[in-house]
Length: 118
View 1 (tube, rainbow, N blue to C red):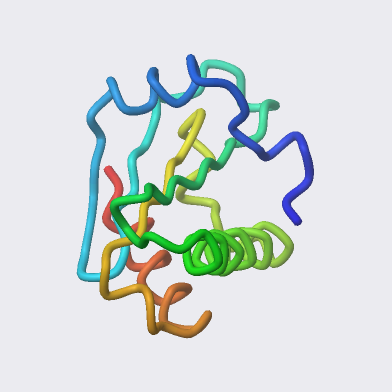
View 2 (view 1 turned 180 degrees about the horizontal axis):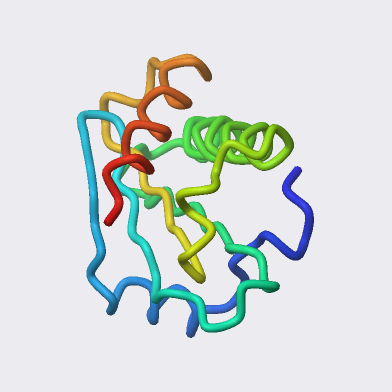
């Protein structure tokens, strides 16, 4: 589980991140990046969105969310997200191919996308 200070919580924060339109994607994930930080002491917050359109069963949707959360949690723990620290928030959205993937595939995709962020 990601610590509370790293979670994107309310709908306003999600809407503001979507509105900013910094988007990178590949075959497995789409990452929306929020505004640049003014205060560097605040941590970057992460949100995870898996809609019903992705899969009908909640078990499948929750599994993908758990994998994405674990990927981010490990990256925070190992301090691998220095490139992301300039953004206020990031939202991760999976694509259909993510359904059969393992954690290592999602991690690889996530780090590739983080490197592509401006």
